[in-house]
Length: 274
Image (cartoon, rainbow, N blue to C red; front, side):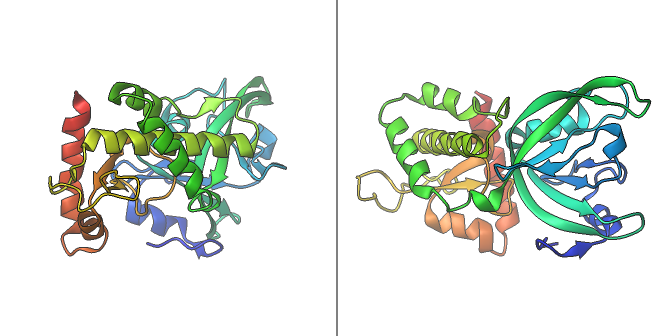
């Protein structure tokens, strides 16, 4: 199912295809690398104030109808989606028994807390996630990511690069969209630098040497996101492999690409286990 922004879908069809809870606003799909968020106005009386802010990011209220909201189930999945290797897809509910409209794919860059009522009108702690459209990130500042990557790979050792690559998960207080974008660029640059350093010039798919060196004399390999339909969005090195161009194309377009991708995921689990 190729989701198209603005197109309407039946929620039943989405769950039939990918699973996930059919009730509530957050559906974390156990068998697929997706988290579906369903947003609407029906929960506004319970403090669920989902909205776009002035900085161009979507502020989404977490789940939990009574008591303080906690980082568990759907809330935990949204916060840690990069670490889990999962994409966030947002849909707008159009009313009871009506279709849902696809808004787009998003990345979580942070959250804040606020006091809101629960369904019993008791005041409690609410969690509000800061989501940035991935389309605003992909290919918009590739040079910035590359600059960060090159700077890090020449100044940090492998362990330092890995620490940087996994330390930029969503954090509290990322209030402005521009700050969120900078965090994602930094994370992407750190992950790219670490993955290339980990590969040591050899494709993590076929095991062969990189086919050539780039203009800076560095073996040319391409980062590949093993749990994503595309190579856009936030990164985590446990799900990113350094592949030669041939293997990268085979994974995406080859007849046995899915099986090849599964074998790369297994290799990554072994590499990162240590």
